[in-house]
Image (cartoon, rainbow, N blue to C red):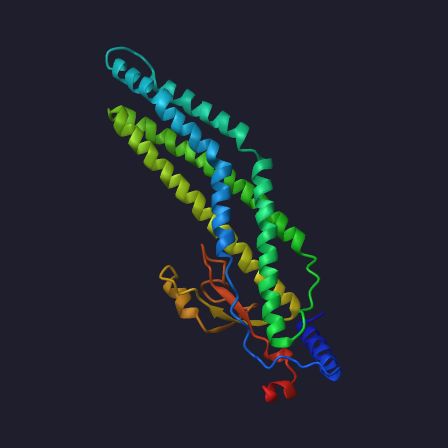
Length: 290
């Protein structure tokens, strides 16, 4: 069905409801779509749980292997002791341990669970907007949903893997640079811990960004499948919102003609939402009465 055919179908269903004697809503503006902040925070914690073996392995490296590496470095000032090889072997052991414990299966399990929870949360929000204004549910079959959720899982498994792989690479480079610079064991340990915090923040950022992107894309797909062609941009306005997204707030955009920022949810960690424009779904008599 084309958008115009879907709009006509909604109007016919509303006319049938009205003819049956049931009152239709008089509200023309949809309620604001609630952003899944709770699921975002839960997914952050879940991603950190899945990647914890990496952080644990590096912490063990600091306690168990770093003193020996530094001692070998100091000894190498007088001999040919190869502390570089020790660093390589230590990071190699970290990688092996992480590969054994941070598996595709563990990443897929947590990603799929949250993909479905975000999808259900989003469906509730989109349906609430339609029913509040139109008094009936949107026309959707969502044959695309499983493919979309599967793509989310595949992408997130790769991102989780990248968190640990990049983290190991960063620690390896840091160790080599600091050991070669002659830093003390204590100074190097502190630098490694600070690097772990950076990796942790990156993992949290990825988790938040992925929830935002999925939520935004599901809103777009569900609105478009229902026949919605335009939306009103709604920004969060909490101090973390980009200036360009604040400029979009309250403005009307079409799904087939995105603004320079992209649609809500497309930009990094964008928590803005798209309020559906439903005027065309309401037949003239109902609009006038409203």
